[in-house]
Each structure stands twice: as structure tokens, then as C-alpha cells.
Length: 122
Length: 107
Image 1 (cartoon, rainbow over the protein chains, first blue to last red):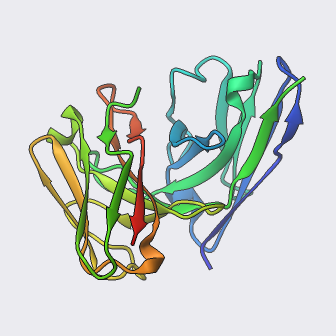
Image 2: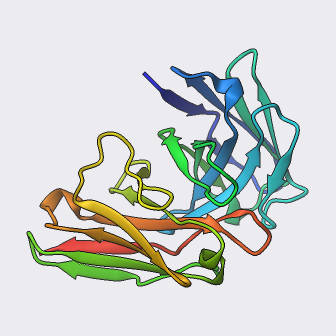
């Protein structure tokens, strides 16, 4: 079945780095744009980054620009999020999500992973 | 702060109809999508585009839009519909953005 499984979360000290992975299965990964979305404890959803189906374009939320890097390996059906210079405010559950591949006037995340928790604390 | 505004909380009596709204200037140009999130679970897409439901989403969920306001309507709310609901569209930069979320209580 269509599935996304995140991994790589954990507890990390401020200023350190962490890399999240998202393994995709059950669909043609290389045909879809992919996103990272995060949710701080008790808070709402926050979009983090997007990468186009072929990796040709990447966009970031202002809150992570210059610190986080989204990438993908279509040969491995895997999405990544490299997080550097982590801050306490980056503490959140990080979800990978598939773009529905609609027209530009629509953005929708039709498949979500179960999420991986990242805690930034000394 | 989010460019999409939602009421923090809404309640509905069991079996009645409830509308959850999302306001933002970008909704004049872009469609909204809606997500249901239950405690400890990942969000689930329930409505996208003009008024489309992914497979498996009950037809009591519907979407509409007028001007700068998008709405999610649940006709005949069930106990299992109690959840947080988020709208999503694009911001003024064209990047995805979520509303602050609405906590739906079914009485």
C-alpha cells in the first residue's frame, strides 16, 4: 500500500545537526513533489520545505531557510531533511507528505507519514 | 502568524451540521485543502480543490469557497469527527501555508 515512513528523529543539543529520512513505498516516488511539515508540541501544522519530483527546485519556510536542506534520492525512494544549527524552537514532530500533483492553484498533501519527533534541548 | 485564519474551536451536536471556516486573501486565487487530525495521529486529507474527497472520506464532508473564505462542512456530524481541522493553501509568496486549526467538539 502507499506508505511514507520517517526516521532519524531524536534528542539533539542546540546548534547541532540531524538528518531525517522518509522512505516511500507503494507509488512511483519519482513522479511526485514531496514536502516536510512540522508540528510543535500542542501547536498547529507548519510547512517546512518542498522539493519537486526531480529535485530541480526546492523552497523553504523563512523559519528554516539557510539552516535546513531538503533533498531526495529517487533511486532509493527516499526523501531527506538535513537540519543544521538546530534551535529549541525547531522541536516538533516532523512529517513527510506527498504533494497531490495538482495544478498550481491547488496545494494538497494527500499522503502523510506517521511523523518523527525531534527535540532540541541541552 | 498564519495568513489563513480559523476559529480556534467549534462545537456541534451529534447528527447536526457544522461549518468550519478559513479566511485569507490568498483564497481569492488558490483553492483550500482541509485536513483532519486526531490526537497522536498524522493529519488526513479530507477535502481538496473545488470540492473533492479522497477515497475513503465519507460524503458528509464537503468543501466550498466564496471570496476570501473557504469552508468545510460536515453534514450529520458523528462522534468520530471530533478532531482538529486545518485548512491549507498558498501564501503571498506562493509557498504552502496552514491555518491555525479548529478544534471540533461533537456534543
